[in-house]
Amino acid sequence: MINKLSQGARATISGKELENLVEDILIEQEVDYKAQKPFEGVYMKTCKMDFYINGPTRIAIECKAQKVAGSVDEKIPYVMLNLAKIKADMGILVMEGAHFETKPQIKTWAKSFCHDHNQKVLKVMSLNEFEEWLFEQTETGSAA
Image 1 (cartoon, one colour):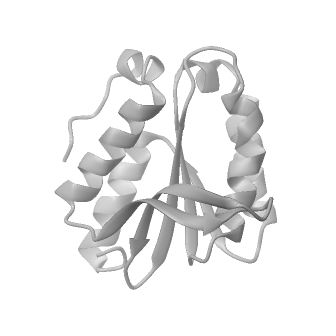
Image 2 (cartoon, helix red, strand yellow):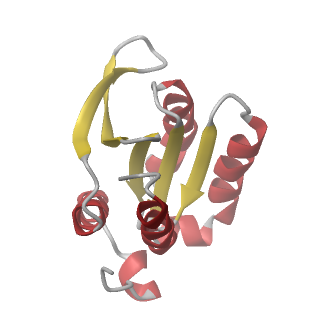
């Protein structure tokens, strides 16, 4: 498994670094995926999902990192709506950063959106949770 990030390292991660770490996990688990997969978003324009696994279970993955207060937390509802809209069996938001730790209500809202949305399985995870979850899925063949 990829080395687990310490809390301090997770707090200062950038969006691109988070995407790179998620991609490293996908590669390590030998998952067939596409990066920056185009799809039609909720505003009826072409968007790109960070990662898309086209396995037995089609999984869309979006990564968001936020170190300090800013606009990323305002984008979370948009991301969740797009995860719900994309043609996939499951949508996952991987969230990291100090801002999300100091504002837990952002992750709480995203998780409540997952529970309230019954059309598709939606999940919100930290990087470490994603790595553990994907390992379990590849062991069972669900995400291979």
